[in-house]
Image 1 (spheres, helix red, strand yellow):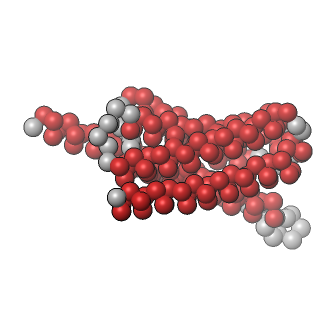
Image 2 (cartoon, helix red, strand yellow; image 1 turned 90 degrees about the vertical axis):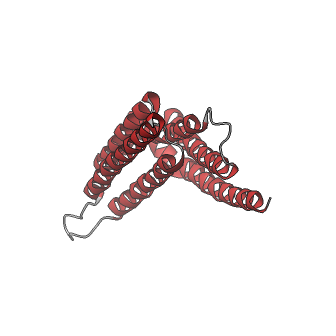
Image 3 (tube, one colour; image 1 turned 90 degrees about the horizontal axis):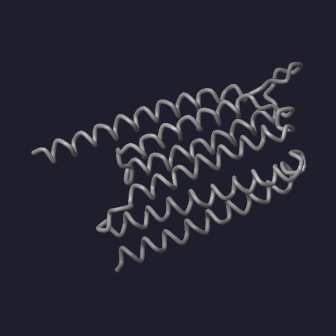
Length: 211
């Protein structure tokens, strides 16, 4: 009976943490509207504002999706994972704030751009660590769930590396140079690798189901 009550308590804790996280992320997404800037003469949306909005929106949605999968399958309500989750939420809020207040002038400042990419790298790295913590010490985990864990860790590690490379590029080049072809190529490589990883893990999952 005590074991059942403990399991139910952990389940409630997970649900409350996920609900709180969703509220924080949703509030952050709402704040992204500040990115949308208007031309003072024509009162039309500027292309820079639109691109910044959709770029930040897509990345935050990606972070939310993998955060949801973490809570769905791997999150354990222990001290370290809970602390990491709050740290992750703080990073996401700071990222949204940065995205909403960085203009073209701000992106010419090296430390500002380094902070931006560094925070994204940390956000993805924490999700990877959280998944590792969730499966550690579970030797009897189902094969299907283990494949999902590997998939999450692989994607999170890939994008941690992509943003870490962007961070390094900005630290060694001027922001204007780094934000040109160098970072564009880095993101293109990341996108291609993401597609290849998706194909690989879909085939792995099918093979496991047919075994």
